[in-house]
Image 1 (cartoon, one colour):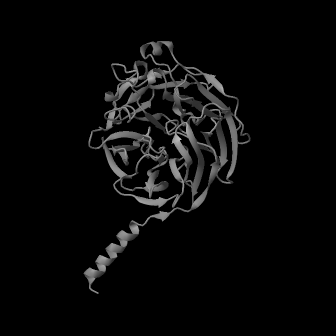
Image 2 (cartoon, one colour):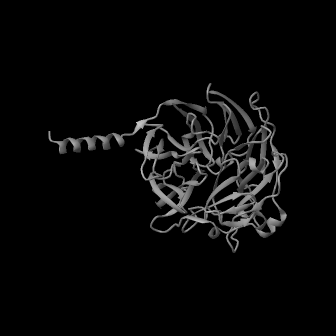
Image 3 (spheres, one colour):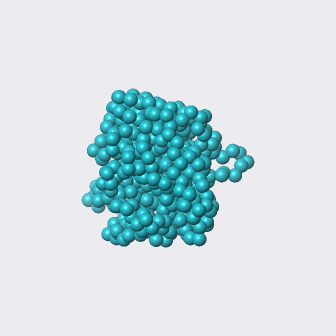
Length: 435
């Protein structure tokens, strides 16, 4: 065999093994056989010490949380609110306070209330307090942006601001709002609209994802609106720090005393167009230099949602396609038109290793969970199967915030026995702890 032939065979062998998908090894199980969540109330799972604190909406509308010891695999659930509403928008989000308590925060879908439960002495206790109802809507803001509604809760604590807790959601005006607490969640400011278009459109609703280093910054990625409603739906970025919002290069957009700002004032990550399709967003985290990394979708058609990975390097945004993910995952009744054709399988970044993405994509008609990793900012990927040859769809994966890169990776996701609509579901929450 000549040298050229040997070299060619060797190259083919290397290419072959580099494209072989391996199955990840680890512990897998169920947190609950009755739970669902959306992907716009986060962090829906956090790691504190040896525990994961997470929660979900049960099929009867009860809001439930659990304390999961990922070393012993002990799972200790606690009821937060009995029969609140059977709607997956209502899942709780979690934040540790500066005093060491755990707050669970959640809303109903497009109602007028927000709830907080407190877990004290989390190492020894599992039962949260009774829900506290708060109504942070400002009358002055409501006069300027006249639509009163509350959906989603996204809480984050910043140690650089004396442990102030910020919480974000779609509240006054059907727009992104923010409020804060300087006493570990005991009391809260009135909410402020921080993003809107002018002239004000009562039906427009930007969708937002948030991420934070827990120290001084809160990263914000958002869209024009819902991809079902917008003729084009682009992706924008800003970050909050020290009383102001900024572009990725540090240029100030506005102080919080001069809010709201318009999408056109923020960074443009992807400009939607007819050929590439409408975008939606999946997750945001930051790299080791605290620069933003974003996961988003492009939908050239509703039958294929492309997954994309964006990062900010040397003063500009760069995006690379990860993969095609297939169509929507809701189980459309026969003869009916799908109401949520943009409900893609889902993606989640590792919060301390932005090279790692857990995602759900359609394989042979079933949505499976996979781990994808890049070492060149998204140009190429290696993959591992987390689920394989499944009978039920596996969607909306989430890597707990607070997980460090030197710890065993873990991911949680929904397994769907039935998901027809966000109010009509029978789903489970599963976990995988990678060895």
